[in-house]
Length: 79
Figure 1 (cartoon, rainbow, N blue to C red):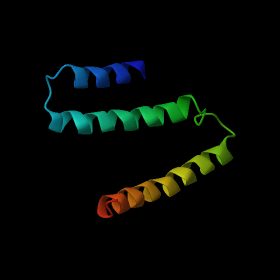
Figure 2 (figure 1 turned 180 degrees about the vertical axis):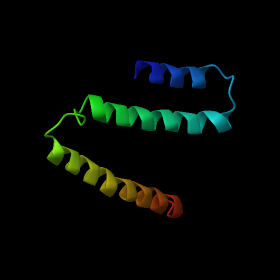
Figure 3 (figure 1 turned 120 degrees about the vertical axis):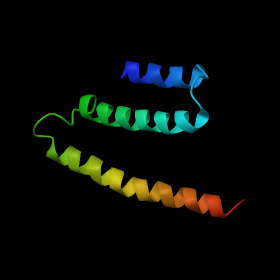
């Protein structure tokens, strides 16, 4: 996970890659790091953790459309 973080910093700080490549690349690295941290730091890989796994997955499925809807709403309505 430290390697993934260093890779993201190098992609932004080096100015070698174009911005059209760097932004999706960092988002991909963030998604990979998110799932790695869920499995290793939140112990989702361990057995007998069915209920915490179910609650986390349900939370992700509720939060994702909520965040998308709120970002679309804020993009349409300008304060």
